[in-house]
Image (cartoon, rainbow, N blue to C red; front, side):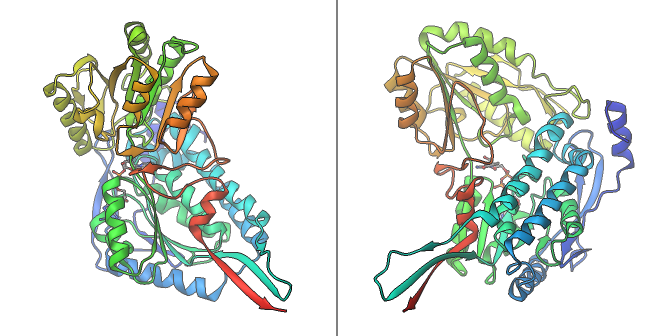
Amino acid sequence: MTATTRQDWSERAAALAIEGRCFIDGSYCAARDLRSFDKNSPLDGRKLAAIARGSADDIDRAVAAARRVFSAGHWSRMAPVQRKRILIRFADLLESHAQELALLETLDMGKPIAHALATDVPGAANAIRWSAEAIDKVYGEVAATAEDQLGLVTREAVGVVGVIVPWNFPLLMASWKLGPALACGNSVVLKPSERSPLTAIRIAALACEAGIPEGVLNVVPGFGAEAGDALSRHMDVDAIAFTGSTGVAKRLMVASGQSNLKRVWTEAGGKSPNIVFADAPDLSAAATSAASAIAYNQGQVCTAGSRLLVQESVREEFLEHLRVALATWAPNDALDPASRYGAMVDAQHLESVQGYIASGLEEGARLVAGTGEGKGCYLAPVVFDGVRNDMRIAREEIFGAVLSVISFGNTEEAVAIANDTPYGLAAALWTSSLSRAHQVARALRAGSVWVNQYSGGDMTAPFGGFKQSGNGRDRSLHAFDKYTELKATWIRL
Ligand code: NAD
């Protein structure tokens, strides 16, 4: 039965049998020491499942299974066209389980069910399918050698890849890595966030059902300091593909240096500027987009447009449009299909966001929308005006719907403020001038730049950060670089 109403989703949620165990070498199993932790829903606090608390022992078992199958070649040496077929079947299975997966995502981390259905699940299936379809269309090179030599430049799977992902888009972030990693022939040990492990655990069985051999995709849930740390220090893991905070990204690089120099690829935090020039083509449309840029996913988005830079001459008018636009992002039960603004991931995170709101007030910023009062795990968006770029709320990633409005006078000033941040994930600008659009886009130090829109993009272009927003790229053929080693073979003729 297809769920369409709030009542349908609640009934489905009540009837759901949720798996919380590890998935190692093709089957579900408890953590070796039998430890587990409770996963409660941010929607109403109810316990969803006991989740296996993976330890170094479980990571060892998963890595051993991944290595064994990698060396045996069942997947790594399978013809690319065959891996493609199996991965497309996996993507199809994600789609045919869309309602179940979307519900797990909403119950687990609080996002509106409509968004989980429209974005997270189809986006994940698309990421897997896109990478699968590409894998039998990438070629090696023949080097420009002297007559008596043949130089072949080929790419081969890196081996065992540890994938560590955050809780804000659990399935989607995992899929951006699983798609290319698996398509290239690697084996994977996936460590989902302790705050949202449910879809990762569920899709492991779907991967097997699709025909991915046992041991190729393993999932070990658990805490960062336990399972995550063990994975990052493991001597038989060849690469870590990480999405999460900048602080943890730095730790992973240290762990690599202290263990086996595994490749570490990080997609980390952001504090992205959204610059509105007075000649923006449509101020009202820009305000609608700015509201969505800070409120979508309750502000828990790496590319959230959390610093809104507005040219002084249109500031008042723009703020008026913004207030109207933000009113459409009122908290509402995430299981209601009409909801576009759900719950924060948990009470601890809500408190952290409220701490930033308090710091904004202490530093003298003016609260012009929202109150900072939470209800359960729900917290309405907050806007601060009169923010200086050196305030904490403008410098640190809050990871909630707290918008800092900063005024500027001219283009040079806007670019200087925009780039004055340790991060470089994304940036946007709104202008009617073609020259200004190009000049400012060039000057912005960010991995993605949007003109007259916020967000946007798909699997066809790379995604990732400059500066402390990370290294390497997800999406597009560039992502394949992370999951392959480049080999030069010289043949004397
Ligand atoms: P986090 O860094 O706290 O955790 C991410 C993952 O790392 C989790 O699975 C966690 O268990 C694990 N981890 C934590 N400590 C670890 C350790 N010592 N060793 C190994 N693993 C460890 O991030 P989060 O709170 O889950 O997610 C929010 C962050 O993710 C934000 O900073 C956000 O900007 C970022 N993010 C970035 C992107 C991107 O593409 N750049 C996308 C989504 C989220």
